[in-house]
Length: 161
Image (tube, rainbow, N blue to C red; front, side, top):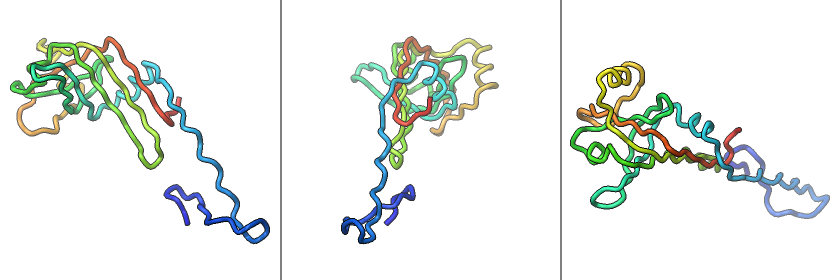
């Protein structure tokens, strides 16, 4: 029998000298390690989907957003009538992870900082011109929110240095 990664898996041993398959080598040790802030930003740089956490009147909220990274800040777009827009000028947490369940590898990055709505016209124009950030959700998503990190941390298993 073969596993998903092509290594042989043998049945019960039949005893030495009777054609028994050699034991499979042990799986590599999976060590959880802390990621440096530079490694964290490197993982976030391509953008993607993350979750914004904030305290609302109804309690702690975690909402998914698609995001981009520019100038060591996280940027996402939302509609003016959303919870994300209502709580955009406040302390937030932002979390992104990538998991490979087959290889049992992955990473998670947590950013803590303050979110603010981008209102400067020149900065809005720069964001529209220079970053590729198309919202997945339908409708007008013309409120740009920037998260300025005050702390960034991450952990990974099987993440190259």
